[in-house]
Image (tube, rainbow, N blue to C red):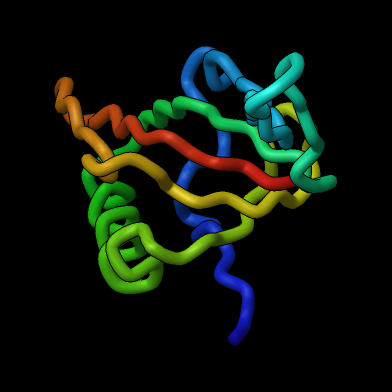
Amino acid sequence: MTSILWPSSLPCGFVNGGGTETRLAPKHSFEPEVGSPITRRKGTLRQFSQDVEMVMTRLQLETFEAFYMNTLKDGTLPFYMTHPRLRTQVKCLIVGDEGYAINRFGSKVRVAFSLRITR
């Protein structure tokens, strides 16, 4: 399977710099029957979650919705995009039960969604 790339016709910058980028801890903690809690590293992947907002034109929104529904199979497939802060390619997955939200204002729309980023 080939890698899916973020469409070049869509914005790659996030509103307000992308908001909060939160590191997902690669660890697992448990309490044994006897003794103090134990924490173990799960792996070496560096994953982050980020709530994203992008301002798009109505034409870009149509492109985004087609990309989300058809190419990403309703957000179930990962894709690659240039991270706006790092300027490097990162693997992303749109997460959350809602998928994305649209807020219209004038001739533009604000599209909000959550990403899980692997780098």
